Length: 248
Image (cartoon, rainbow, N blue to C red; front, side, top):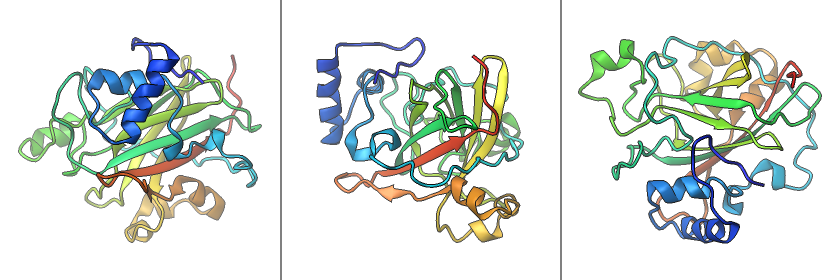
């Protein structure tokens, strides 16, 4: 599998494998090395859905649409790639618990959707969104090293990958990550991802508005510790099933 980011680097497979080996040892990677590594298969330690035999045995459940919310970035950052922890070539990472977010986009028939743009956005570890209506009044608490927004173009199996932080509560909301799926000029779905078992879920009106238990389970996923991580990393996998079959 060769998932490239638009405008990013490509490199020989042997070099990519070496980079993944370094990542699995959890030695610090440079910004460029991380983006190179993203061009290869997501490492086995993060158990990507499309490599797990028999993982699609459960009944196909369409992902419920949810509100975009008020804080889709009104000024996109200069860096919009899939690594939200480091902005451009900065050497200072964002504050928060590192989370490896893998997933897959499927159409209404269960077929992978390739070349779809997956966008995510979330508040930083201090509860500040990358939107002037929120960040302007919270300048002193905003984490300027958190990208806050990222994009990934799905591969042939509909797969995507982001490196971000574990979501934290926002006033009045349980921890969540916003998602928007696009293809061409069409917006196919806007939804949100939640932490399975988080105590604030039951008090969140948007989460509770999902009445179908299977749909609620689809967007409420287990965040699991990466067992061999020396720095307390997490992983989560999110299968997005569209209610439409994209054209093209």
